[in-house]
Image (cartoon, rainbow, N blue to C red; front, top):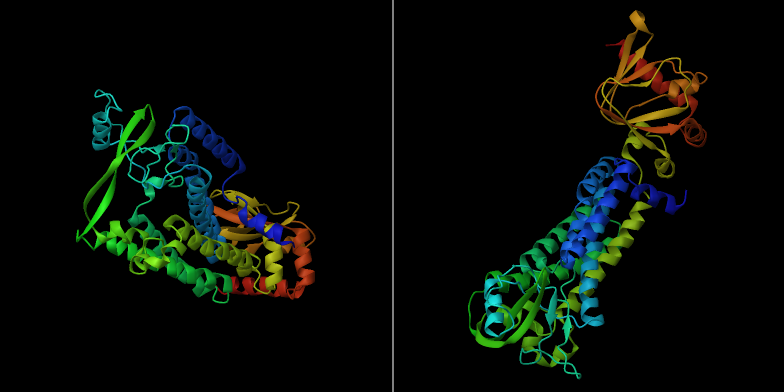
Length: 446
């Protein structure tokens, strides 16, 4: 069984029907096109593109957690870390590849910023504030005024805040890093030998310490004991597009956060650079430092997840057939086909031609023998139990009727796969017979 097949099985949608996935994809694309036509900023286009996927991914994630437990939680955590790194990649790209300005969160078309633009003659007095975030920013020069190109044009670019710049606030960073550190610790308790995850945890701790320091200066240090320069913005709204104009810099009393705390410990202009200014030219700016942090966390997390996924298997298959080897569980899991049945539905009928073995993963089923007035209940089975083995042993005809006692989910295994397992594992025909005899004996004693 190749790793690609295991990965494809884990990544595929097992609970959500294909038609729902296709419909969700179409809705996502249409919403993004609509937001773009309406002139909405990038974060709104991205948000509406993601919205239809939230319920689909939630239901699918719950199925993965039910069947794979901690590997599924590890997968969700890995996807979130990759998305977080993607946000930092977008921000760094905006700074390096465009004339992006580090104004995060982007200036908002508030009443105050609109009034400043009116006073500067940039905006009509009849134009009301929209409270949209700026999608375009005029780059400020050293004095905080409009930076002009050699051709005499204003240098314009995006607010270099990634896609969701509105979330670029200290409380969001703090909660994300602390939660990430705690989740990593919990995952490590279940995969303590995963060296890649330990490597990621080391850098995640450093990153968390960085944000703890920044958050301390932001939330707890309120002393305005430093003279600092504050950039002033005016905003101009053209429909849904808001442009921020730099209108100089103001001298004011500021907190340590505004002087150095915002840059943390190791970024340029941060704590280390403030007390050892000779190091500043060698220190990275805050966006690049946090991009490095996230790269050193995310890449080993992905590698660690891949290493764990190589050994993933369905826990209900392991419960039903405990004598299968780990390798056989891993190889068989992608061959299982999930099926759902409503309460009262007949899953298999006595006398019918049989071609599959079933493992119950959710709900309960009743097993009956006979038909009509002679029908009697033999057993009730639940999650982790199996049925369909007797038909394989008795020549291919169902020996009992199995009905869903509740809404039930089963995993179907064709008889070719089942036969291969019996031949290759310690679980022989005699083992199956012993299990069936034990089940019948327990029922007779009731």
